[in-house]
Image (cartoon, rainbow, N blue to C red; front, side):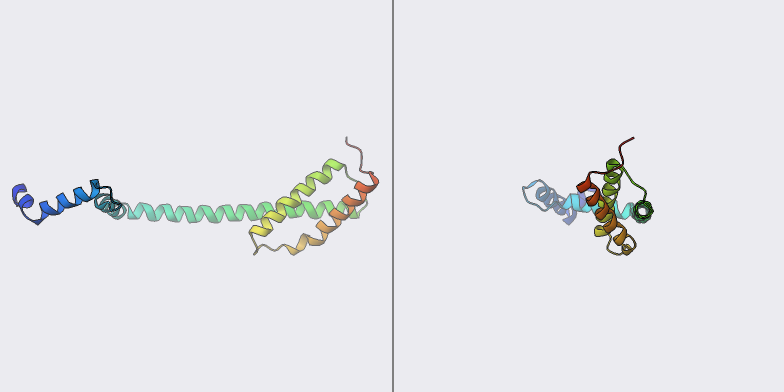
Length: 143
């Protein structure tokens, strides 16, 4: 089939109509739609690999975040254990652990499946001791 035959038949009319619709200030863009479909068909395997990689990355980030939350919780429990053993702390050390507690709470709020109950009493005790030290102003002096 020659180009002249294509243009004079329905193919040429269809191409002309699609071009006019593409140029017209209408939200229908047949050439763009067609190119997107063609691009997705050509790159289907690459898109699948990208999605698989993204899933793996998301899982890795989630495990890493949970590991950091575990470490923060361990620091909270260790600080509380020190308080219970009678060890005193500076105001700055309390501020550091209170900041860690804030980060821990934010993580727990955004991840309701995370086992949070292990540190609840320790956090409460740290807050109580901080309040007592604050009232008495008897923090360990800064080094």
